Amino acid sequence: MLGFPTGVSKIIDLDHDITEDEWLSLVAQFRDTLRAHGKLEQVGGLRTWRNGNLQISFEPTKTGSRLRMRTFKGDAAVRLYGSMAAAVLIGTLIFVNYLTGDA
Picture 1 (spheres, rainbow, N blue to C red):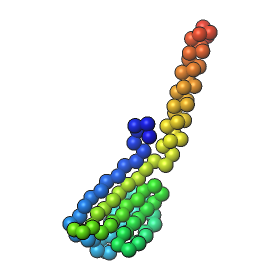
Picture 2 (picture 1 turned 135 degrees about the horizontal axis):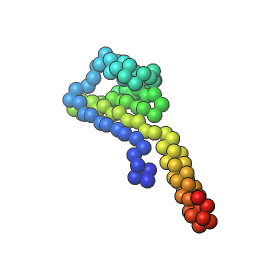
Picture 3 (picture 1 turned 135 degrees about the vertical axis):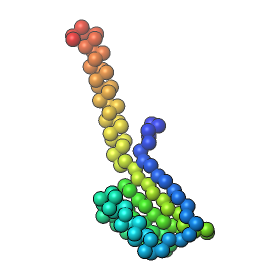
Picture 4 (picture 1 turned 180 degrees about the vertical axis):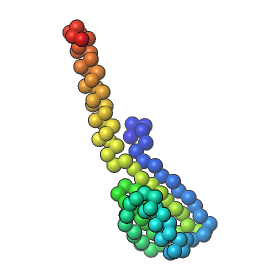
């Protein structure tokens, strides 16, 4: 958005498919680290854990599996445009004060 990042993501390819126990252990580590419960989903071979804008998933590939981690700032647009509006307002007030000679 206007050149500013609103999210981050990371993809890691693994040379093996993870087991159910490995997946549940990983989810437990994410829950502990992020202090978030989240929701587990599984559709076919795709396993997903999500909590709000945070999503972590495993998907099968021909050579193993792929771990995808991503999150985004949902209110980034509102905050960015609000900050820009405030800057324009402050700049306008300073300019008007300069023209009128008020300090």
